[in-house]
Length: 198
Image: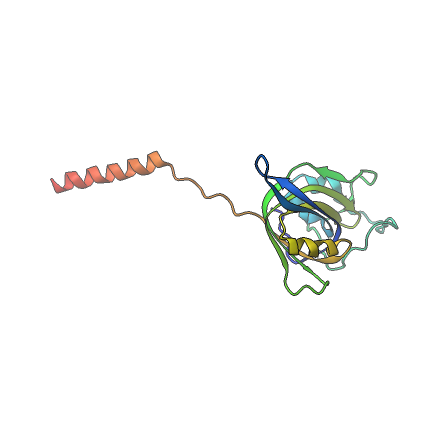
């Protein structure tokens, strides 16, 4: 699952809104648009065939980047399979329609905030993958949050600012025990104990 930890990011926009809950009930909400430069290995969390589609093995030619491409961190993890060259240089960025609810999100900024901004029940959506030559990926997505009024004010100042973000996916649902099997085992054990006592 997608699970960045202390990842540098830029907040490109914050939009305060409300979300309808019930017939006449609205709760404060907000959409944070997040952009980050990550290793293409992040794609493996979304689908095993995404990275091999967007990247190919690098050839001997030097890597040339478009002047408009963002700077890429030097210490970014590189794929061991050598998939770092653009497989389809003229392809537009890919968009993912899936939504990922139930995340926990923590944001640290340089805005003088003493504590991290933390949110539960965050829904991630509107993922856009822009492959960059050299094995990096420009990733943008939205995070729907439910802030307190104080947090909403802080988020307004976050727009166009940089920070670090950590995202934790929801815990997997507990497995259900087959009730019939467990009851059957218990009854069989009880029958055996009754026979032994007789």
